[in-house]
Length: 109
Length: 351
Image (tube, rainbow over all chains, first blue to last red; front, side, top):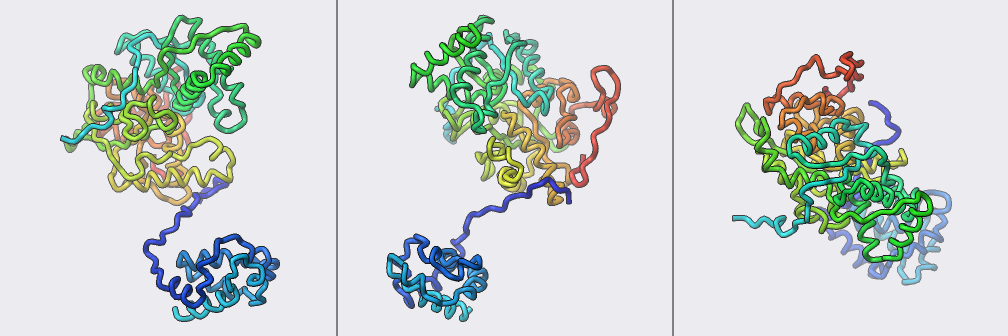
């Protein structure tokens, strides 16, 4: 293949129409405070794991909402469950329990 | 009968006495198009069109890449208008869709902000000693060919019909974004129902393909592709269009913008070399023609004088379908009569 110094960019559009929202609803039942998240990123900014790895809690939220569970499993293993994110969340989301709940629901896959 | 919405959106296109301004890039990539346009207007339609030797860029590429400030662009455009005024013309015809967009934008700006017009007049006078009138009519050359499409049809030797099947050729038309998307009122058929190229195709016997990404940008943009690392986004736009049109098996693509013609032609080579993917079933790609080249071909002009051999995707198979004769041995013959070196062949795209 010839090199041109660039490649064809892949589309970034999300196809969520084909995804079932059932798992998201079950997560919201397990941890209702998740509905209050407004994606400020405070959790990500304070995350200890995120200081040393590419772990990003906000990304975890989005991957779950978009139904991209395969990538999510990898990500969730990086969390140390220290709970600093829960302390700083301005909306009082119980993030530690949220992560644990996500792991449980993913194990049912 | 279906309603023809484009009919509601018409623009004034002057009848005669045009001042022509050439494009910066078309002379390199589609070198026969502008000469063909002048020949068609002068010899087929008997119009008066002035091709000024002192013309220059409109700064469009620099302006849209954010390297030329608007004041500079206005002054450079004012100098072009001064050439038109000096030559005694009032109808301005820029060959390039980007230039067309720049001129309409500037004239509209001057209508809204007369102080900027006065400032431009002052700057031009101070720097060059020149004065100018604002054109009465600014039209793109494709508007003129569209206006006289039936007169031209009567003079044409060929029709857009597949001589083997007797069916109309399937044509994708692609209109440059700056033709009608900036100021819809300045485009035939507005931005939503642009008819300038579709009108030519229908009048000359072809069938227009209405595919899902018909109005999508070709990906040319300006600042989008200038940085090499960003070119993948530009290329992705073009690929999206090709993938959308491929199922309809178009015989060729017709464009009215220099950037669109160039990208839709050259990117077919890049995609073929990168992914071994072509968008016609035989691996030759889809030919991309300018409206002048198409008009010239159908009028019986020599395809090599029109410059079709300088396209990336070659047009012999299209000419075979229409029944246009060509001499293979003269394909790369220069004006001196000597044969020019043959270009290197791509690895994947057949030529």
